[in-house]
Length: 357
Image (cartoon, rainbow, N blue to C red; front, side, top):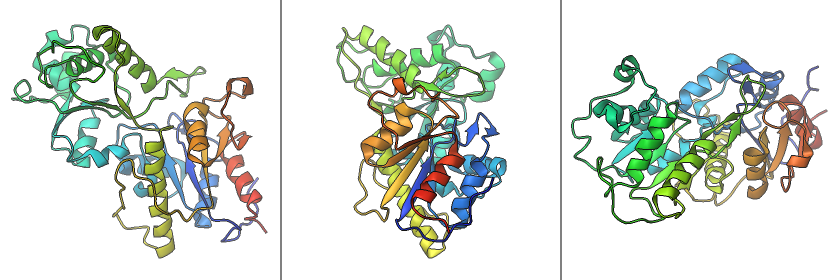
């Protein structure tokens, strides 16, 4: 069933933010109605962005894939990945330890970081550092680079871009960096502290996420829990001071709000083909917003919905991902509406805002 014919303007100025996994896609497969919902918004020039806790690739690559799968033209300027706010850290840190799949090295360099070391580079430097690494020799040669001064130049920060795949090795190397002497490899500081030797950023804290398997899987939030617990054990039970972005943090919702405002302006001026994007300073709220209401459409109450709720946006909780229609588990999370899928979410919002004949 198709939507009714929509008019170009609603009684209110509305915008949308969509999660991807569990809302538009399940793994790499489209969820029914997702393409139709986005095509309707495109047709009526209603601004929206894709706001995901996923990452590991460039915004351009994610936009191209989703455009192809859903048969909807989506601009990279509409995509906010979990690590997109890291763009605002370029220039703040010199050498970073990039954590995640091998692709994150390329992402970090594309963002503008000049000195990027991937965890596989450290395994290549000395296999004994991570005796339980799951990387084969062939994988190591494929993923890693030889960094001549890897043990002579300090690391300035650890940036977790996406869920790493070699947890045993990654946790060991991250622990070494956080407890090092001034960020130097092969060192261990004498004192204990809540504050690590170098700062660590996690790009999301989703404990669970939905893929093609029938049960939810551990996400970066679970990885973060292990890193924090081991740090605590090594520092006389002192908790780790870390930085988290991604949904549901206000920092990421502020960043996404800026991107949504920028995209709305491009729709108004007709400059949607331009590549220039007005990137905000990390942690700065928009001074003015053209929107009366913004709707976050998500499947995870603990990130999408609570984040929108705390930020002041409205929310549509769908049943196609993490959430399985168990209202007893929502607790203080109060979605504006609970619907079967993203198609129903968009339809309900547009009809309630009288965007129909």
